[in-house]
Image 1 (cartoon, rainbow, N blue to C red):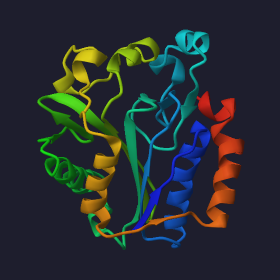
Image 2: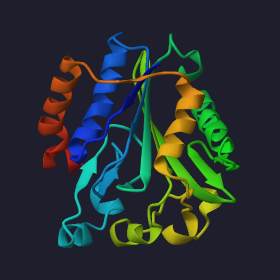
Image 3: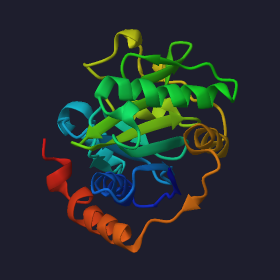
Image 4: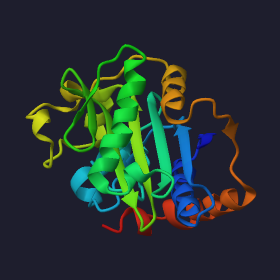
Length: 241
């Protein structure tokens, strides 16, 4: 598995590189890639099919100059920024047969992440299809974009992010998992409390032990820059719904 540990200061570049990874996998250039990244700036990102006005407090975002972007995978709106470690997996079904269908792919990947957290003494469990929780409080949300021969899995691990900030920019969702009940963001989210580097090391151990960090190819960098400019920086994409 190729290992990337690449974070950009521009949110659009971070989202664009994940999509480029998926396209590289689908084209047969890489069978499996794990990317670890963390944004040094805060921003709101919505799922590919969400309606921005329904899931984001745009007035507060505009007042506070909080960027709002849209990613290419499904799932709900989340805050990104310091204290939120992202892991992105671009996998072909030939290389990793366990991810060839949707629900088994979540079970396989979240099982690996649960194993990584257990190595740090954290007993997390998969709740519903795509969350990880500790003592009933969410520490990880996950989403996917799937193609005919490959998938992109997006996952977050909250380790220091202050959940109280979420209330300023993300209204309480109407579509919520049963285990959340009527809890607000601050009562529902639990930061893991481990340094990001420890979490990275644990993820590397379970997904690609012994792998060395690599750089993206010049072709991938060019594609990332193009996507960041033409798609992820554009209001037409962010506010298409």
